[in-house]
Length: 140
Image 1 (cartoon, helix red, strand yellow):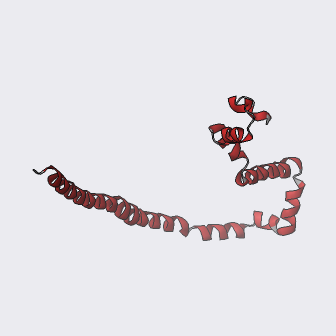
Image 2 (cartoon, helix red, strand yellow):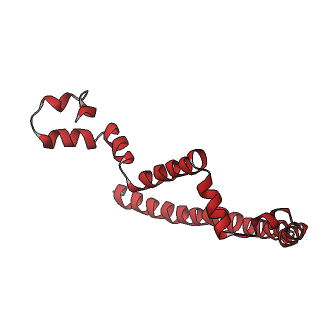
Image 3 (tube, helix red, strand yellow):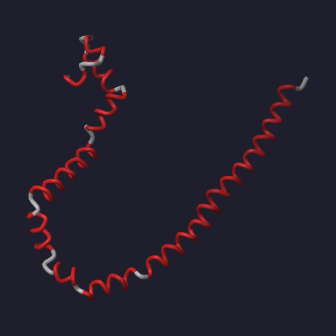
């Protein structure tokens, strides 16, 4: 428990109070975030990438050569470049058309205008209900 020496409850002999003080504070939340599985996986990925590409670059090269023996041909081939260009040519046209259509119909139509319409209708109902309750409670 070296990392909690600055906490004032360390003088107390009860581990329950120390545990509560550590893990129910901002400091405890930060420590807990460093002990979770996603953080450990992300850190191991960074360490593994550093090891593979800084210390032992021959390992990724061996994987690349074993899995894709024709990598050298496809990198320099004009056929592969032409196939890539031909396959990616319709992507901007389709993405712009679908983006504009979904933006107009879904976001502007249903979400923005639909929410405004729903709040307008709901406020009318609440206004009438509030007026009725006001008349009932304040009538002589």
